[in-house]
Length: 224
Image (cartoon, rainbow, N blue to C red; front, side, top):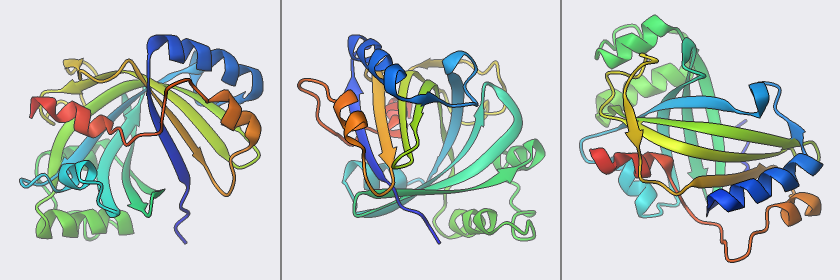
């Protein structure tokens, strides 16, 4: 059964990030995957020639989804295919592992292996690439600083240094040239299950900041 979670996003400044780091570090635990408190994320988002995923995001469509490939710390030996869904403001994510060779095949337009992969999410992407015309579109790179809090299954992240590649071809190349995406200094994301504890709600409050609908993918589409 798909688990939907609540989510807040705020565009924040460099000084906001420094303030939040201090507050969250005092009450939250750290993510075991984050060496020295951070890790690097590279994603490759899919869209079609009509910019379906981009338009649905910008138009605030109530029920929408997007597909991406993702790996961490510029190490493509572990790659995930992910589908993010939004329904009535709640978010969910499902994923499947891909080998580097499989990811390269998708980049090359070779879909022949996907139906026999035995992974439902890979098979779903195959059908949507065939029917909707989804194709690898935009690289999104950024640094993530994560914090976790057990009650409510809360995860708070500070994302910054958002960059984009010029096209999709260099996704698996750790040395792919990327450029600043012209995005805000940082993005605060707060995700939780049934309830958000007051200690976290208080920690992430910033004067003059309201939850928004910022999209790293949309920000990185400024180059096409």
